Length: 190
Image 1 (cartoon, rainbow, N blue to C red):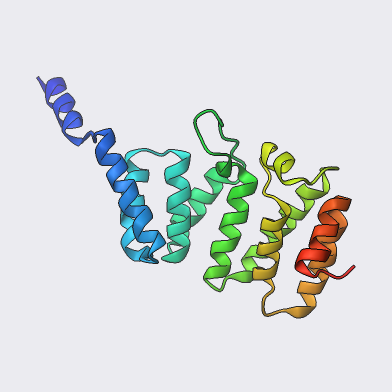
Image 2 (image 1 turned 120 degrees about the vertical axis):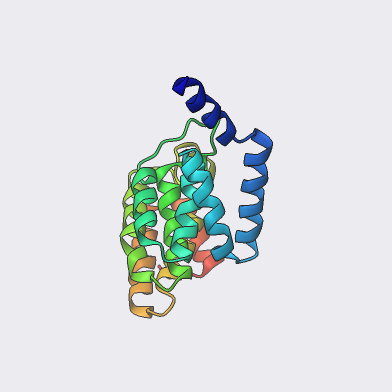
């Protein structure tokens, strides 16, 4: 009889796909509105219900905004080297993209120094590619050069010395076309 009770209890706690989607949409809407304290419990509930990479990703970002360092560390550790199955999951769950988005959220929360190792990682990864065309990088799970440039500029927005140093580092790890685009469109110096 106890087995039937446990089964019924589990069935009662199951959420329908529509309920999960409604929760996710609610969390995403609140996040877009900057209501991170309200979005956080929704993402936490979704993550506790189902520990999927997308739930971990949303919870990671909300954790930074709400200063929940323990959950932030847990979810980042799960995602930092993740390789998504792109038949079912977005490429943006790839570890390199996670590091980029995590760095951007850290900068949003004035934790710029913590974004530096993430930026260093991305520059190191870029240096491994001979071709740094956006489509090629995306197909290989890597953010495009413009995204890395955005993280660089946000990380060092109040540090012109390191901004100049890192601009040169970026120019040194990209191909000729990307270097030209950075110089022409973003006014990077040679």
